View 1 (cartoon, protein in one colour):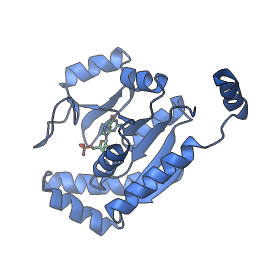
View 2 (cartoon, helix red, strand yellow; view 1 turned 135 degrees about the vertical axis):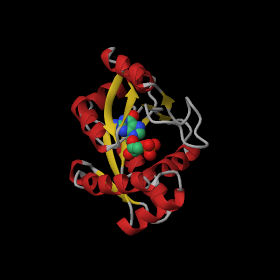
View 3 (cartoon, protein in one colour; view 1 turned 60 degrees about the horizontal axis):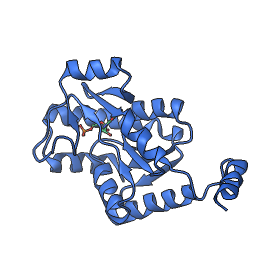
Amino acid sequence: MSEAKLFILSGPSGVGKGTIVSEVLKEDPGIHLSVSATTRSPRKGEVPGVSYYFMEDAQFRSEIRAGGFLEYADVHGHFYGTPKAPVMEKLAEGKDVILEIDVQGAMKVRETYPDGVFIFILPPSLHELRRRIEERGTESREDIELRLGKAVSEMNYLDRYEYYVVNEDLQGAVADVRAIMRAERCRVRKAEDILKKIEEES
Ligand code: 5GP
């Protein structure tokens, strides 16, 4: 009977958000992960429509004009956006939804969806973050420096989030995110809404 929740996960590039989310989904396949649109090119192994909806700049701009995004942002010189309709549909169906988006996007979602649960994933150190991005081997040297620079400025937004999780080891981070999700489903927000729902269902 608990209401569907919108979980927003942010954190610097390379921190392991994607891996954490896929582990959470493995254990709880009922959660819907929003697939973002982007104008960046696909990386090796990325599947269109699964990893991202890859779009040309013109198509992305026309989606913006049509009001198709819940939020969008320019990240590292490319557009990224959350298609609005699927998120609204899943929430209306009572399914929890996860958005994996950058801090600019998260702050926009906060304006329209203050009941969202905002979680920030941190690396154990900047040194370790650099190591992980380098190990991934998908970015040019210039891109790595860009992403590390952005990581530092993104961490300044930490106090706008409700939770942080340090991705020291994957299983620990997954357990923390799951614990946050579980606790949030039990949170009392508006007691009268919950009581009304109990009455309706009885
Ligand atoms: P990457 O290019 O490494 O896949 O993603 C770069 C950054 O864009 C990450 O911080 C990721 O969370 C963010 N991002 C991915 N999808 C979206 C989105 O729909 N909206 C916003 N604002 N950021 C996104």
